[in-house]
Image (cartoon, rainbow, N blue to C red; front, side):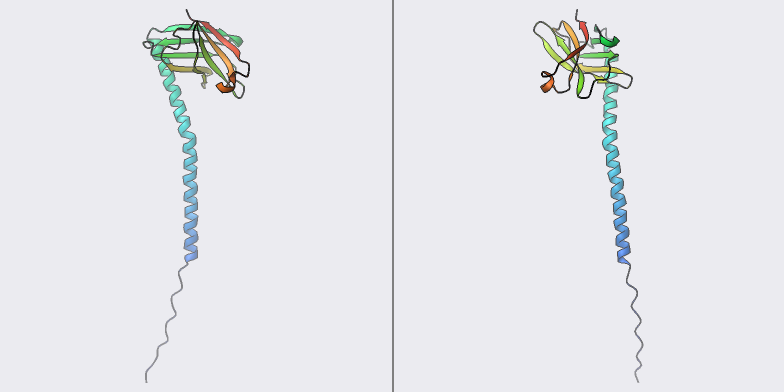
Length: 174
């Protein structure tokens, strides 16, 4: 007589749904971590670059001051004052202003150099944490100019002509 053995019960099925859920949860948390890191980098990197550019501008101004610069005093409204500097072998120009009020939204302080046949803007002043407005440019920004004006005007040059400009500081190039 042949005896039959009872067949053993199959092992329980692995808990795939739980494992899949754990993987999804890990992926979600990992994705969230990557997203947070990306947002932090998007905020920190431009701020770092901005601070680095400001530090370089200060270094350029110091270098210009050390090289026997050509200077023009700027005086104006609200007790604001400043200097235009051309130094470092006339390869760099800098503008430093203190005492300007915060510009309204959509407005900037733009430098204008004027002369007999010259009217040009080397750029816009940038506010620093220590309440200075600075601009550093390449070349002799005062070349062929007779006066410098710091104007409060619309940020966009395309719309600036349609809105009044306000003169904030003035200097005579001698």
